[in-house]
Structures are given as structure tokens and as C-alpha cells.
Length: 280
Image (cartoon, rainbow, N blue to C red):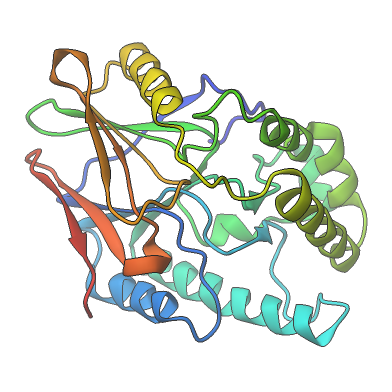
């Protein structure tokens, strides 16, 4: 069950499957190579042997309201929402067949909360048809040989990015969500898209450098708190996987974005793990 309170200290345990495939920053778009490859990955990783774990940013931007192909106010919006509906339906079908797929909330995945009785009266949530869980912050996987893997989107790795932290606080605030779920969906989506354009293009643009020291310090703290041997995040879109050995042999990793070269990380139940490229 997803916690109503979004807190940096929340942790959820993941089920152990024969293999877990970790993808970061999919940013799925219509007619993009990464979209077709993602759908192929779902088709070829037959349940119940696999868990697909997405470390945030399923689309360049989206909300978790019940998907509807006609919610846009302009032709561009309607096409965008139709495409998102197609992908969400494919994920829902994978889940219906017994597949396991979990989404860690990224900075472009908006409006996730658990269902309270009051919220059920307002709207249903599209994500419940698609994902086993939506994890608001940290999640952890323990292998058969007791290696512990910790996961997070990675958007809070740099405490000096105050503009982004303000955005994160604002869009996850319960009052804002209550308002957006109370108004008609097409207007809620339009308002959130305008908010996205304001913050991501003007207030918090994509950083031009990787905050190496801040990330190392943050990773060290989280791995100690959650007793992890490995810590994987996304968010920063490095061209190559970034690795840093920390104290006591622990390893922190920043994954390349899926939408660039289709990298993913595979963790087997035995504890074996490696970075791979999906070529199908």
C-alpha cells in the first residue's frame, strides 16, 4: 500500500523474482525507438519470473489520473494523451497476465497517492491498473545470498538544488493534489502541463553538470541508513554508467537513461548483477 505521506524516509521492500530488470528515465514518446523497445521488453520477459522496476519518468511528463483519450484541450494534447493511454494499456495487459511491474516516482510522474475513501469518491487512479506498486521514495531488494540493493529516482541527491526542492514540495503537497483531483480532468492536466513548462524550463532547467560530491555524500548516508550493499538511481542521464565504491566495499551507481541507449540493469535472484543493453 502506498503511504499517503510522501517522506524521504519511506522504504518499501520489493518481491524477489528470478530476475529484476531496472530501467531509469524512459521518457516514452510516440514514434521513439525507446518506446518500441520497452514494449518488446515487456513481451519477452514472461511472468512470473521477472520483475520490471522503473526508476521514474515513464513519460516526459504525465499525471496519474484515470487515462482518457479525449481529455486534451488541443490536438497536440489529445494525441499525447492517446499515446500515453496506449502505453498504459500495454502495461496493464502485462500486469493482467501476471507480470510484476513497479514504478518509483520520478520528478515527471505526478499526482500519485494511495486511495482514501474520500479520494475514491472523487476519481479513480489509472496507475492501479498498470503497476503492482508506485513507490514514492526508496525501495529495497534482498537477494538469495543476502545482497541488498537500494533504489531511488535520484532527484533529491543534490541538496543545493533549492529550486527543484521547492518544486518537489509544491507538486507533492496534499492540498494541491486535492484541488487537482476535484476539478475536471482535462483542466487539471492542462494546468499541470503549464506548471511543468514553467518550472522545468525556467525555474529548474536540466543541470549542466553532475553533482558528484553531493551524490556520493547522499548515497553514503542512504546506504548506511537502509543497510544496502548497492544503491542505484537515475535522474541525471549520464552517457555512461557512473559507479563509485564507498566505504566497506559498497557501490553507488547512476544508471544511463533508457531513452538514450536502452540500457538497463539486471539483478538475478542469486545476486549476480550487471548493466545490459536491450537490442530487440
